[in-house]
Length: 445
Ligand code: NDP
Image (cartoon, rainbow, N blue to C red; front, side, top):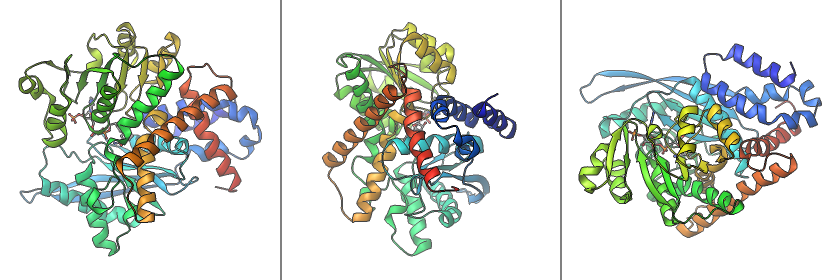
């Protein structure tokens, strides 16, 4: 057993009950082997052990009352994984599936994603097993206030800067920031990102993850001489990332033929994205309403990846592990030539290995969905400078950042003599190399 395998075996022993974290750690560690082969001294310095151990985990209770006055208690977390490159940065997720293992996997992935953005930010993630679905506005407000009552002690513009993720959008960020301000008695706008425009938010932040995903995919297409015009696309999810990925894909000439939510999916050759925005973004409703209101298209319960659809590209933008090996086979059978992740880890490691085997172009989320956190960092810059850039300025910077991330992947492919389509190893190597270099340079970090 070599150093890397010993560390992985030890991690499995300690964190066996956290399958998502183990999955993410295994994927990253296996692909950064060349760094350790080039630096045998890293074993003595316990570099891998330092990389996989979170600097701090905060768990707290979140008591709140519903509209009937009944008390409920949820769990809240903030995993401050790595501050090597800058203040901790990463979203908050409110979803009943949230647990410590999922928080750790997301925070771990965030470290390398943030490193790839080239911006000075560390990696973190937080959230709660609270389910915002079906809750009234005042209930969401009381929950957010109670959550921030504790979280406030651990964050700050130069310490840790949370943002949104699943279940945490502009409304929740507004309530969380309002409570933070009341407690601190200071503006400190840079403490949260994804804020509304009237109190320090950035234009184009809402669109950034989805748009950035497509900018990244376009770079991959350019490199592989694949013309986006007319390509049929599946976009799973219909939340923040999915909606703006679909919008940009359509603007670039692709044909989005299917989208989904947690209950089912729609297939429509003449997809009406404005109606989807109305149902999902504004009304917080279900996609099942779509065909009757659009007067075209069809709705089916279950996962869009179990359908036999013909599409050349897929953008999974819902949640982790949506696509396992059998669904990956269906995608390839349906003619899929490029898959770029908008969500975090929507493909299992077996699905990714299958794409590699089949020569399918594949972009891992830590590279292709980094546009969201990058624009969050641009929001922090605007807050520090006390000015606001125009939509076009932010969008231009976002395009430059996504191109730079793609370029780093291509450079890593060349530097480490990887398979020309291996963006997974390339993104892990490029991100990890920066974190490790800084960690070692700063001594016993
Ligand atoms: P949202 O909450 O806005 O949307 C999530 C979407 O996924 C909804 O359509 C939801 O359906 C659907 N969904 C949830 N669970 C499942 C499931 N088990 N099966 C199928 N569909 C499901 O979240 P975001 O769009 O913000 O985030 C989506 C993904 O992108 C996450 O993995 C997140 O970590 C990642 N991400 C987000 C960033 C951001 O800036 N927001 C940045 C980088 C990554 P329903 O409406 O029915 O709940």
